[in-house]
Structures are given as C-alpha cells and as structure tokens.
Length: 179
Figure 1 (cartoon, helix red, strand yellow):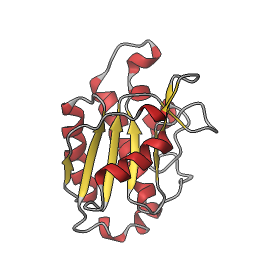
Figure 2 (cartoon, one colour; figure 1 turned 60 degrees about the vertical axis):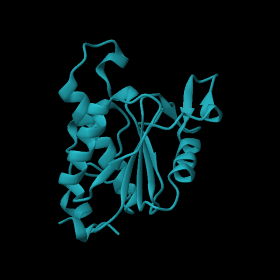
Figure 3 (cartoon, helix red, strand yellow; figure 1 turned 120 degrees about the vertical axis):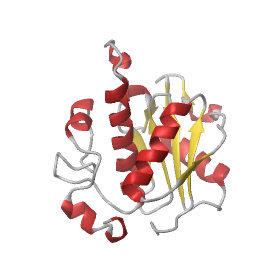
C-alpha cells in the first residue's frame, strides 16, 4: 500500500501554505510518498459543537473521505481548529485504523494556544510528529509503549515533544516497505 500510493493533503478552512509545504517535504522524506495539496475545503458546520467550542474530528474524517473521492489511497486533513472526540477533552488528530484517512489539528500544537511566545521550529516539529503518528494508524499501527516512538500516545505536548518523528524499530518492522 505504501509504495506508489496516491496521497493528498487537504486543508480544511484556513491553513498556512508554508505548513502544508513543510508537511509534503517531511512526509516524503519519511514515507517516500509524494503528497499533493488540494485546494482548501470549507469546514462543515455540522462538525462544530458550540457547547465545547470545538470540532468533532470523526465528522471531519468522514467528510474528508467523501470529498476526496476514491482517487487517493491516502488522505491527510489539516485543520487549524480545536478538535475533540466525545470521550476526550481534545485530540491532536484522528485516523482510520487500516483505512485511508487521517486528520490533524494545528491549534494545540502552537505555543500561543497556551499563552506562550510562538516558536515556529517547535510548532513544525510537533506538526510532523502528529501527522506521522496519525498516518501510522492508517497503515495499521497501534499505539507504542516506547515514549520515543512517534506512535506513542500523546496525552499532552510533553509527550509530543519528547518523542521522535520516526518509528521505533518494532513499529518500523510492521511497515516493511518504509525501511
């Protein structure tokens, strides 16, 4: 599935072009997959929960799949809004395990969200880690116990910052075409 995959990055709403270009380069370096960038999609109003002031990521994931059609093997949605699933206060992203779609949110990856001065390098590193993590789920990987592995569950930015943007040896073995 990984070799010769047709892959698409889909911005939802307003997403900085520089972030999308950074993701295409980094994702190619890691997966050897060329991601195309689609024109932005409007964020469906049905995904917004006004009580939480967040967007329901599962609705957005379904919307991405419907909107992108069947031409692509891999779809990564990127949104600069806060995401949630009902069981959690927020999520950095969500993916279909063994599917073809994932979504990441940039909002909580920014220092500014927490009232801190912005740091572009830190933000970009968090962004690629979360993108690789969610795509790892698409490729069938579950969470890893190794806190340095990109597949380690990020419950906070501390977890995201301490892990690498690459798969550990055990996870990499499960993705033989990426070696």
